[in-house]
Amino acid sequence: MTPDLAARPLRVFLVAGEESGDALGANLMRALKQRHAGPIAFAGVGGDRMEGEGLQSLFPLSDIAVMGLTAVLARLPTIVRRVYQSVDAAIAADPDVLVIIDSPDFTHNVARRVRKRAPHIPIVDYVSPSVWAWRPGRARKMSVYVDRLLALLPFEPEAHRRLGGPETFYVGHPLIERAAQLRPAAGERAPLGAGQDVLLLLPGSRRSEVDMLLADFGRAAALLAARRPGLEILLPAVPHLAGRIRDTVAGWPVAVTVVEGETAKFAAFRRAHAALAASGTVSLELAAAGVPMAICYRLDWFYRRLKQIHRVFPIASVTSMVLPNIILGRNVVPEFLDEEAEPERLAQVVERLLTDTPDREAQVSAFADLDQSMRLPDGHSQSGTAARLVLELIGRA
Image (cartoon, rainbow, N blue to C red):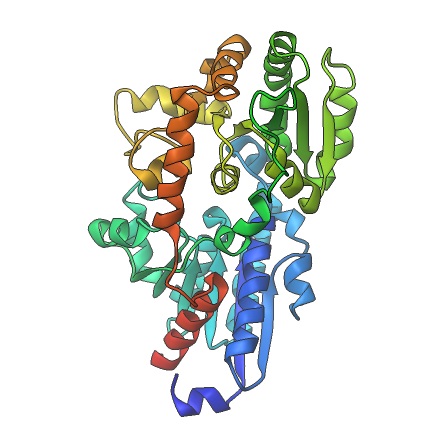
């Protein structure tokens, strides 16, 4: 950092598109304030966490936090209006840097338009789109409007270098800083097979995911409970879906305890012996907790059609959509897409994970390798590394 930068006020404009981006943005804001001696004025789009660090959001995050083409189309007029509102506000603010955070369908539309109208504003993208798995041509296109990319996964800098993407740095995954909260203390996780086995059901944090997976998770859990008397089943739920999930599981033939909030979720992870989960970051959380898992995901009608086209015109370039598998370079976590996620099949796979089998041991062993792959150098924090790279770019600009 140059002496001039260290002394002067900064203006930072941030655009997040959903709750996970709000958490990343808040941590980045906090780290920027810690690393920069002068005052920082924040503006842009975020949620409650970012507002708690000093951002007054242009509009509620719920206006744009949607997933899946069907949901996006239903909200499209509002989303388009919010894109242009964000662009106008960013240009009017004339910040020292624009930081877009995840949610590429929204945030990259903002960044492209800002670059076209105000090319002098440096742009940082915090969280890489999955160009290594889906539509790799996006990497080269990003290099036109993204000056620096902060990646959460260790293989992403090399992927962008290979694909012609922007300058990319691995900053670590935020999970790294919370891994200790997921790992059981002595006596917290009962010995496997001692009559106190715990199964986690994790059908997702979005309504669309829960709608597509919860019923089949319930059928699989009922089959497992019938085969394994004494099995305790926990279902961590995000607050805005907890009531709806409780109403649904109340009608199941098997007892399920719904827990709400991050503290209760992490406590459940520390007790668990196996999990049945939706695809996403939760797979990394389970790996950090040492919980073997089976992963499921279902596509909406548009992406199911795209999957059929993919058989003729390949558009994806990985053999797994499970993050631990991709990072490790080998498929140790079983995954089930669409019609493959059949309750009897899921129950059979999870039952092997609730027993001392080679399937279970392979995952537990692989999780130790995963932890090493994602580690940052000693003394480097995830948010601190991201903040340093943002300030470096401002200084360079």
